[in-house]
Length: 110
Image 1 (cartoon, rainbow, N blue to C red):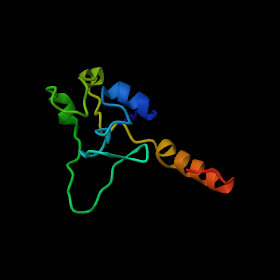
Image 2 (cartoon, rainbow, N blue to C red):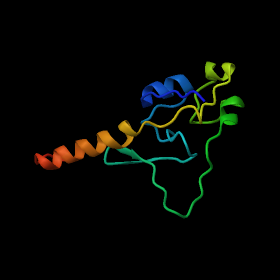
Image 3 (cartoon, rainbow, N blue to C red):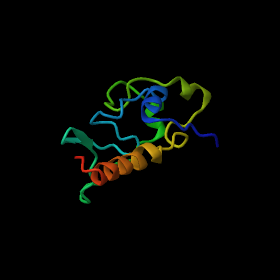
Image 4 (cartoon, helix red, strand yellow):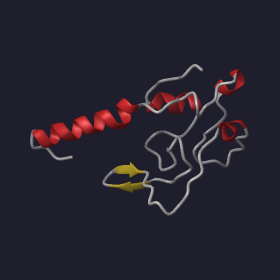
């Protein structure tokens, strides 16, 4: 299986979904994020089961899903917009951890 590895803005462009800073931006679960300290957080509190996003949501798009902005042209060539777009660990974890570590090391604020 071929994969598309790209940063969040490029994934949003190719998949025709809402951007990574929106409260409906989670690409794996149907969860609504909350703004806290100028950041969006997708918190799982353990009591609610969230449904997983699936490729048929993109194929059957009717305009009432706040996560999807339109039909991706990649659907026409059989690309699975969930399984063939892995999340990028460098941007999700490594950059944030490095940034916080540097701020703490040099006395900055996070």
